[in-house]
Image 1 (cartoon, rainbow, N blue to C red):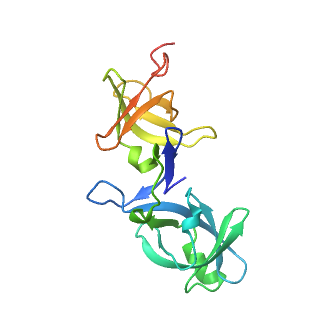
Image 2: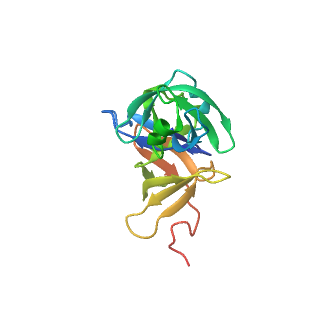
Image 3: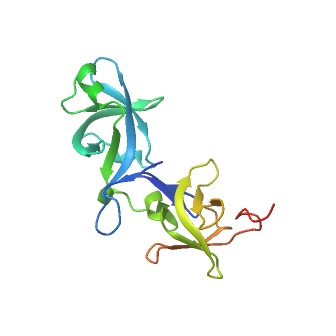
Length: 193
């Protein structure tokens, strides 16, 4: 998921856009608009966020690459996500213009996370090292699986390393220091056949 995606030493959270001087993205993706529904200007929104409760009537969301502001007017559950209506979009023809747009919120409006939980964008780009200080690589992305999220770590040499976001492997996350300490097991780095 985005806005994003949240990682615990068990999970992580998702997509980001724009940037702020602190290195944090300015916007986090919370969903994507798919197809129109009915005749009253509703459109189906695929949910990316782990915090859909932030989506309430009256909230300002931001659409597409330009993060154009738009006010959420109504929403309701649908088997494919949410059915949403935006202010000023009252029929299928007008709302159809919004199809395939990614929906963002400002990152500063993101809910705080519990200790040991991290948004995906906070982890991507961090250095990964062993407890002995040996460099493993850099976090390229986070894969969301059923059990726990998985760090995809790009090594300087060799194949990418997949490291589950589980306490057995992720020993420490130091966001300020830009580093994740991991305990690897034999074969994880692809060095043994």
